[in-house]
Length: 328
Ligand SMILES: C[S@@+](CC[C@H](N)C(=O)[O-])C[C@H]1O[C@@H](n2cnc3c(N)ncnc32)[C@H](O)[C@@H]1O
Image (cartoon, rainbow, N blue to C red; front, side, top):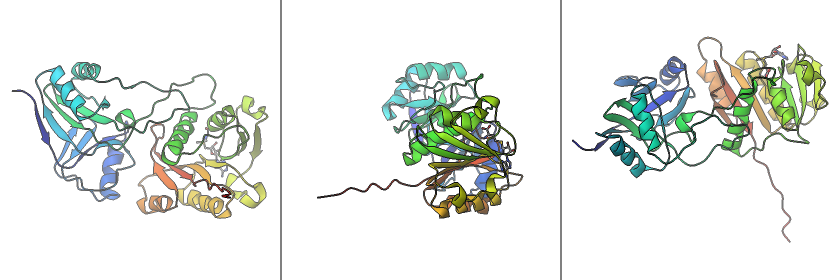
């Protein structure tokens, strides 16, 4: 039969692991997208009528210009992909062996876990999914520069006091990718709200910055002894920017109502005492999308769902640095 490539309308969306129901709910409730004519390929959701200019937060990458490709051999499939673009990653829910053989014939892309810090590449990366042994849905244009849309880290199972450290590592990589933010480093000051047991603090002090860590409970003993850490047992939200002063980063992983967090973010940004914030927005029950939109509205901000987030979104705010130069 040979190879045929058929452009198809709409988009195909790949949710974060175990987040398919969240993504479908967001599609209808936040983006007003109709799920009529939906086809599922494993976790991948193809929507032929997708016409939103937004991508759901719970989607890790989307095929933005999908085509259906019919092929007979692995070589043919790889040739089609290579002809469209250099870099590709698979999302596989069936025909695993065949997909692996196709990937082997493509230019090398590192699909493995990364070490932190990792600079997310800016080059486009396509996504393809075999739907049977002779058909795949493919798109050279996707919504993420990461292979199949997610960043995985090599994990340290011994030193960090909690797995939450992966969340701040991922968020810092995103802050760099979207805003060019530098990682917190020596000489930088961070204020961390809700720091116990200390996963985030561990990342920050390992990078060389000092941390003013506030929680009702103490951090892990090694962090309590660390000279870069100042711990206060206190309600983090009742400290005012005026009394604490300036910070390079203000961060929160406090479990609280999103309304409370939004208010606190405004207090810090209005004070001018910080220009960079990373905060976890903890979702409880049905998501109030109007409230999430209030976070999104804040200039120089982005809301993301992280691979290492649970039922959470992450608010990232990085104001551009103003460089003054004296022209003679
Ligand atoms: C998800 S845990 C933080 C985990 C931490 N980021 C880590 O990396 O290990 C949330 C923390 O917020 C703290 N918390 C809740 N309300 C708080 C408040 N008003 N002020 C300070 N800490 C608070 C809790 O005691 C809890 O330790």
